[in-house]
Image (cartoon, rainbow, N blue to C red):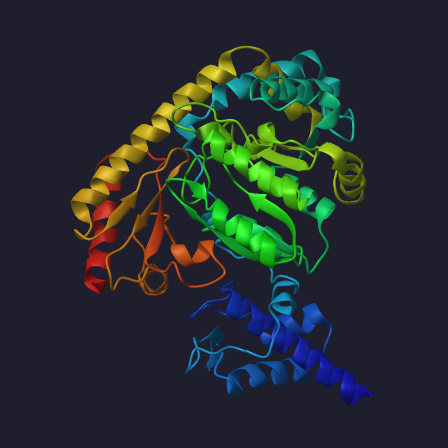
Length: 463
């Protein structure tokens, strides 16, 4: 009996790691957790973990480097566990947070673009006038004044909601997590745009949900014909889409496309979890969320102040519609609302016209910095490089010349000081290895130009 349990344990560990390799979470050259770490985490003997790693070595999925540990290898023939089901792989529990997790998030606007001083003055004044705010509790759904201000803004965007229908969260990722948990169970298939935010794929993996990719383009956004085919042929539990300023493409879908999207989802009775976290960064104007065109109450909108006011605030929100009760139950069991002091300070800031003026300035600055970055890429990168201009956001998506591989470059190159991300991080396959996302948030100058030149030189050496 003990032998059977040991066998089941090592197979479970081995298949889990193999699934991470196949899905792209672990890639060629990545270091695996040590034998002792895996043994401790899975509560198995060291011998069982050694057996699991040996099983992976025999299939050429990993290799040992004396004195350094175990690392991922691509495999001799590229075939990785063809007998394993996709659902089983994606439903596995995630490894500990990647040390570079922050890099996979959408690039955050530089500090000089955020209203740090204004918010710090508001927070200081609030503490001086009402010191008890430090110790007071707030409604589980969040500060009422903040929810009222968010509702006011959303109503101006065509989304009919009220303060009681909004839940304040600790950032946009928590909003997304609560929304997904409200509509899906581990093992369910979730349709996502492709390429898709790496942080979104991380959330899906952490919840044991299976991403089903639907092609998207920088010009039109989500390919609605592909979505229709997917819904007709796959059992899709929900859609998780960014229709505004998506990461990494930066597209903004037209209102006609958003209306058609909501019609398709209503026809198939599939809920939409809308990732609107970057929605305020549209260059031309603040676009409507797709939920504004919904014909039924089957949408959950996630957003955040991370990219407009600052990541340190840890403020996001969720408009869950008919799933409000389920979301509140989940939130009560897992977290509490962010500090009342922060919520009330942001609510105060939103009351006047300062926030809208700040957004207009932020959009202009991001568009200008993106334009400067694009010009540098045109000048420095090999001639066959293609740019895909965004309609909003804080990044530039570029396609490298034939023969270049951004994923391999990331593994081999020592770095240039520029936090670029290879395209393979935005999909569950390696089909986007010729693409990379460049951050377009910093002030342009000699330092940034030198970094672009260094990266361009590395790319040229591959072609």
